[in-house]
Image 1 (spheres, rainbow, N blue to C red):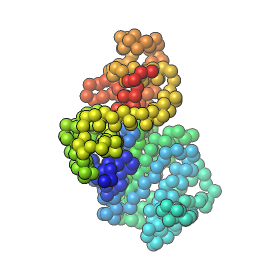
Image 2 (cartoon, rainbow, N blue to C red):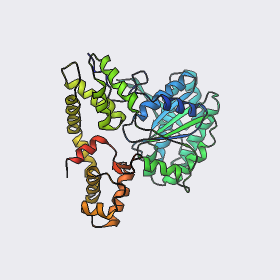
Image 3 (cartoon, rainbow, N blue to C red):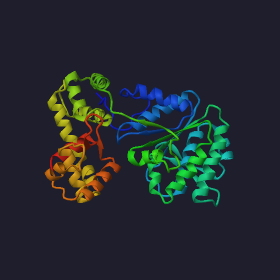
Length: 376
């Protein structure tokens, strides 16, 4: 039978573990045209959740745009991606598509054949404006277009913190804030995995977006629901996973959503038995760490020696304060200043965080943590 677990982006009509409360709350914020900052570690299922929210909104007549800002290289690309995804959404309705061309006149849609989807929509600029002027005009025109639709728009700007990598990033934030606050029937969701960068944009007093949104953290999956999901999906695939084995999976990764799918996926693939065992779980864990080792090595290659040293130390010994003299002596740190700088960098990169349970800093990704425990 087909593997019942999914390790890619989960489509809106596929089985999804819990998130009932989050789905209801986020849909409610969107329906009331509130702006939300949605954040979590990487591979927490943000995109899959957002796509479900947008599917629910579409069923109510709300127009939806999903634009990914990952890899931005210029101010103009921010405007380009909004226009491109707007035209892509409107293309399914001829009258709406023509109306979009009338309003968003500084961008012309270009439709090309695509072997996978049948066609691809990109946009070409029709004005000489550039930089901040182009960004302002694009969002201004979009606001005018949105006012024509009483059911409103829901706009997701994924990996929104990538704006901070651009020149004049604070000015970009200022232009976007000044435009977005005038869009009365549009809900914006600012989504990201680089949580420190993203939250600083909305919570630092001197930044343009300060206190303009609802902060919405995405938490680990609840234990009971995740265990039931694992057991039920194995049954759907023609195998049995006793609840105690599903609990073992959950406990090994602390409810990390990606691994709640990934570990059972590998267990299902690797075992010829009809009933899962603890050995199957451990075998899958080892297999995933081995497969992902090049990814872990890539992360480490981008760190300084002291940053790597601290990352290994926190994997070995999660601790409330890495500047504690006893911790520093145990792990052979000699300079409080450089250790503090390394600690801040690891937090900014979302590699470590303070646990709400015990106040200790630890490695966020549980399998990366397992890899690091093997030693430097």
